[in-house]
Length: 118
Length: 142
Image (cartoon, rainbow over the protein chains, first blue to last red):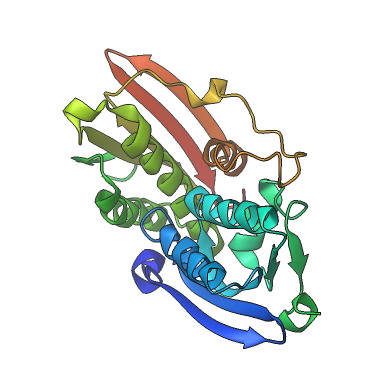
């Protein structure tokens, strides 16, 4: 059996700009070891004055509760600044984790990047 | 011998997670768990090992050890025990998170145990001679 942990242990976060939103394309696996990378990227965006962020999770294969902490922490900070963190393209295990933890109702979740930046 | 438990004892630190995950993947192979269950197995192990790493041992004894055992009670079924000698903690008695709270009201933590309780097909805890022993099951058809 191939080890999924080895194959997808790295987290990749690519930043793009779509209209007035910064889109962070998150790929790989998000766990205790690397979840802080997402928070750091978001802090960089906020430091530049961006408060409308979209996380495209279409390439994210795995997220643990430590990853969920990062999403919640960023969303709370943005909300306190009058901004928002939107999520899009959730699928598979990641979508299952958000559903189990009731976070689909906490975040603004969209099917596509295009709908998330409207 | 098929069905005999396998055991791994390792330092209770975040860097051990990969080795533990690879270890239980052998169990998943023996149990013939389908690929769709492997992600859930990874998550169960991740949450439990992370919990031990963060909460089980006081700072002056870090990094304590965690012992992981698995067995295959029947084809398509994997049983995994995660044991530590840290402070007594029964996650089955942990207060469930309120999933109805808004973003503003939501604490950022407390979701790991909820994930474990939801994803495991069985979950038992016992405190035995100074050890926390948490055993979960995961099935091919769960």
